[in-house]
Image 1 (cartoon, one colour):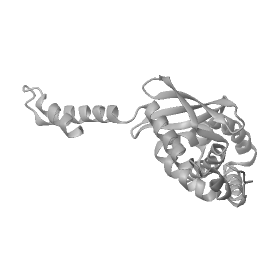
Image 2 (cartoon, one colour; image 1 turned 120 degrees about the vertical axis):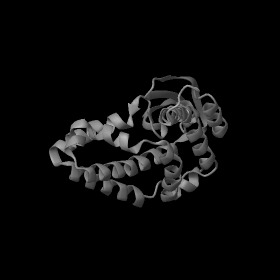
Image 3 (cartoon, helix red, strand yellow; image 1 turned 45 degrees about the horizontal axis):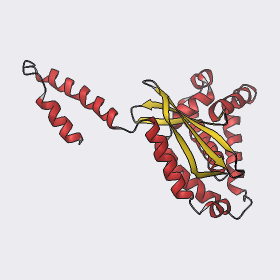
Length: 226
């Protein structure tokens, strides 16, 4: 499909553009625009991620409760290609702290925060019924940001909103925040870490997250019949 589109573009290059550089620049710009359009939109990203998670958890929630490390690996495989970890880390750190940090500190914070959030998110998924997920047909979007709203059933039988915030990058649309019952992962952690970074410093926050990651990895969740 992409090859056919490029061939069509070449045929449409105006014949009066005699300079080859102009034609190449026009073609490159057009191909980039088409490539962006062919990438999944915000709703498609959420739908595909949700379907992959539902398929993986089907009949395995009890197993993953007993083997959380395997759950983290599976959710990481599904989530990482569709998650903007750098932008999420930037939002959580805050612009001032981000600018004050070195490139190495930013990298370590982003990587550590992603692992921290991944474990919290993956564990939370076990309390939800993926098959009950309903994705609203409409979504809010502009050129750079989008919001996709969904509802899902908890294991208590309560229906709750789980909404996604996405950002459009060169790689396409990527999730950077999840809001469960109106509570944003990014905003919640940003408020928490802002005071902690100011009081203890960025290195202390990274070390604390690493400690909590280790604790979550060592903890053995309670089992149930599902």
